Image (cartoon, rainbow, N blue to C red; front, side, top):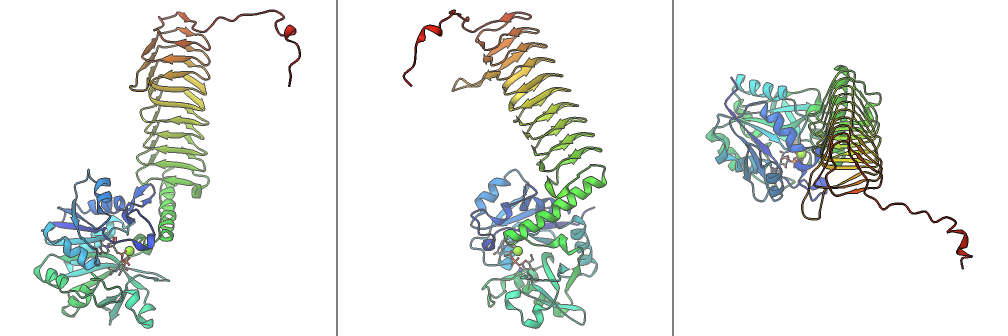
Length: 457
Ligand code: UD1
Ligand code: MG
């Protein structure tokens, strides 16, 4: 049974060092907003309530996470991390609070679990995770006396001796929800270099009674914060390295792991090869024995076993077993490429199902369509699905042959086994096994060019 606790995520800060119009917690890491990573760590604790404290940029954050079971609290003018936790007071009621900075995205669930156990076992009022850094930079330093934590000093307020301390505050706290806690938060002072109410000042308040503990966590990489874009790039590198390692250990080949981008949600089957410059973004799933890339972008797409996709862009698409996609195909939402089908050079498919063994090798647009098994879509064939107001469907029967440069004006049905002659503009349904020829007849004027005389230029 999980501990009865609430989580408070701090996401109201101005994020000045990002130099961005976008709130810091919406900046993506492995394709997902920082806050998404923190929320998924938080959910591992099974909190009774998850509170997200937002500030001036809060509207965008609320919109991006509107479908979540979280309570948003407005901090107003963000006056520091202590002020932010105080803003969540009315929204929490469990006996324990876990405070997560919105900018520490790699925290593993296990670290949070261990912090909660450490806090309960020692009956602390305030406990936090610390990390050791060879270059502690702007992190708050953990000051200990005879091994006991006595305070956290922010880098801007620290003496040279304190700046030399390598044990720093992760910003992840566990707090006992008691009246003394809220009194202490309400009594914080802004008399520091940044003029802010520091959450970290709680440590000095409760340390004398033995109410404070710091749990050192390693690897330190797990608890790094994102304060500027260099930090963001560094964490991207760490996370991508971990995700690629995880897949390789599970039997996926990644010949050049530095050149592959993975979402933490991506799943890949055994014996699949991911070639360089490939992205498996969002909720992408790739089956066993596939070859993906080089140069391929998959967003929220599914690729089944034995398929090959290269130099292509897939968004919300589905590729069935042993199909071949690319080079230079664009599969948009609702595209479904059947077993052993082929979709090749400069073919775009949107909201269309291609049956088993369909071939669309070159330069085609198939939108809002159903294409039966083993149909052949010639180069330059287009489903004219849009009349400027509405979208219309095209149905192409099994084994039909759509000639080069045919325009199929939807709504339209091409029957099973029918032929559409090259260059036809087809506006009426074509019965099964019929030939539709809808182009001007060819005229031959023998010798016509000979009598034309000389041109001026
Ligand atoms: C904070 C800690 C520092 C720690 C570091 C770890 C304080 C005073 N300092 O510094 O000891 O080493 O994190 O990463 O706590 N926020 C609000 N409202 C505010 C201010 C901040 O919600 O008024 C949020 C921010 O959006 C951010 C988090 O709190 O997600 C931390 O704030 P930030 O300004 O990044 O603090 P650091 O300087 O990183
Ligand atoms: Mg920070």
